Length: 221
Image (cartoon, rainbow, N blue to C red; front, side):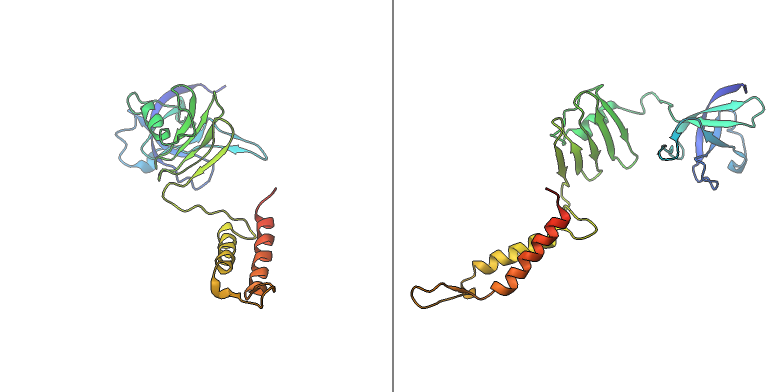
């Protein structure tokens, strides 16, 4: 078995041309005097999981600090990103991000999370089962504490669609038909006792039929 020594290291690059999830590292403080980063080694990931059907992996950020395991000949390098810098992370940042998400209870110690560099937050409440993602713009999609799906896009419009159609034109068609029905000019007077004639019946009927067909393609009972 190869003996490996534990070091701290700075991530220099994550652009691995071999696409094997390697990162280029600079050992600290041993490699601070290296004149060019081209001499810094590429380290294989120590953690992560992969099989024929499943892959789980998270890249570190460039300039972040990671752990590195190195053999005594400095030929074998592994990295893993469970390095914690005291004072770098404040759990209050997580709680503050979740405060606007009123559909989810946020309690210290109950939230497993990933806070990304763009301030997007993926989270799971290990007590209530709430699960979701908060976008940097303030919108969120969550399963709340009761298991209900809650979608809030903040100041952005919501888009609901699939490969066949989208909800917006369906609602537009139904709205147009309703507006036609309540427009007096579309109602033609008839002799006493005879029904009023609706002048848009042919075109509106086709719109309603099409809207119903598209709703069937978009939504399941």
